[in-house]
Image (cartoon, one colour):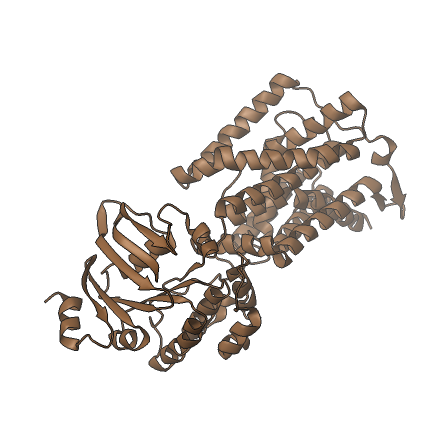
Length: 289
Length: 232
């Protein structure tokens, strides 16, 4: 029963990882850009939410109304101001540019706030739970997080598969030069992808900030989990990202049962195993990434 | 009435000059074939017209309008549509999705999904198949269908026959009359000289980036073509 509980907790944790990894997967899938500032941008979203909570007294959930569009705008600016120019320089340049951005963001947050750990307050909702048995209880907040993750990922999957712009985005992902020949303005596609990616980062950041404490430098840790989720699940596949997040979450919580000293390590070992045994990930994207 | 006017264009790939003062013009609704050996610059010319290759000098006008500085995606909105060499279908998309992407600009015209399926029955049978699971001939048919979905006013066909069996090539070229009937101007690049002469009204030959011959398809004899093609 203890194991069942570990798996259940892992699934809910995995939902958060999946939500988090979604933006990374989208940006890499469409633009072949690895955004090293991904984790830090989610922390920016958390601090943004905190600022609204402190200034306006809103609940962190309400701040999403501002944080999501705000992050989408940040995504647009990131694409137009930094990534577009970097892509023109070389294939490596966006990586370096986002690395620089990561450092800049961390230090900016340190300047604006402080190294103290912060958290987004959600009161008793954060600790409420359904007690199923003496060894299994399901927290309301983790369950909500999983629910939100599934809804967001499903929405993005539907957009990519059914919407005209979504299909255009997949075409751009497959072959940007030919997409141009179809009348698709690839710069606009990249901007849209960046906006969508960062909107999900915003949601992930706020939920992360509600779940656990964060500091200006927390971004780096989350970045690693996002990468692992994307690689385990398969690059470029939304379903894969969900699967990858869930697998990572379960690996960590089950790992905690096996060896409470370093649950994160077990997660890393699972990631390495997948990389060795099935490098394309669990859900092979039919696109050659 | 001149639909397309290419005026003494130079095109470079870095330091290498691929086209030297190339000019061409096509009448509205007409069909021009560009022939020449490998590396003559035929695909480069189509790329320049479609907007995927920038001009070093010269200009290109379509429908009386200078399009030389327009990016490729904007030219598509004007009706200039390229069927690229090597098909270049989107591999992760299904055949039907490839076709609908062709209509991204939502240009008005006689071509629709149903009409394309009617014109190209091979494609109709494959609509849910992933594009990377098609044979060469099937891919070429889909690529042409995809271009038609844009309701092109200028259709550019790059080496449709490449790698395909003659029977399939003939069936593909057989649709050209339907395309021309809608008033579409056609510019085709072909290595198969016989096919080019059969499909077009006028022919131009390129050799090492320069025009070496031009004339009506029915007037040109094999010897002058051979001389222009190989430069002997």
